[in-house]
Length: 194
Image (cartoon, rainbow, N blue to C red; front, side):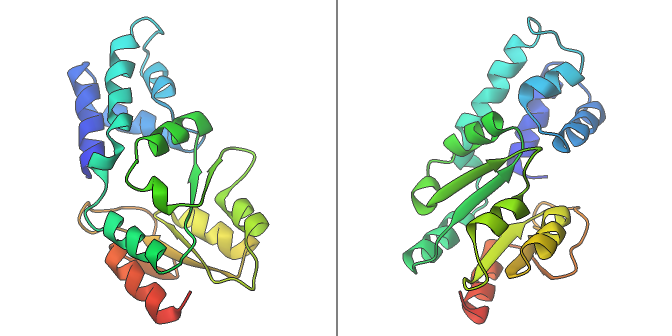
């Protein structure tokens, strides 16, 4: 479990919720668009009773840079300095995803575009619309669902699954390239070309 997840669950535990109950609600909400408010409501919190919980959870988002894996910033910086165009495509409730992005101040200078997609659009839809087969495009994601969909909707995109061994990633395994950290990603991109 990564540091952000540890801190997230610690907040819920301090408010009296057991890990398994919190995890199950999060899993259900991640399919439709997670927010802290939706999570609190799924656990039975009213608007009034969730005020303290939500305040503490929102502090986590403001500390986004604290939760970056140690290899991410240096690799993103190297890719940017080498002329690579970096785009963030994040699925979930756009307002929540934007708050997460706003807390990642160290990464923001290196990304030229951000796309926050939700129920009526997917990451693959953005790639199909914003990129073309005459470009070298990579999609890096931990979820095999997004990678398989990109294979179908934007077949020119080179899909890479990031399953970090340092946190014990447990997503369904993708059939293509599967990497364990961003240093491996940089090596792959340099080897295959951009």
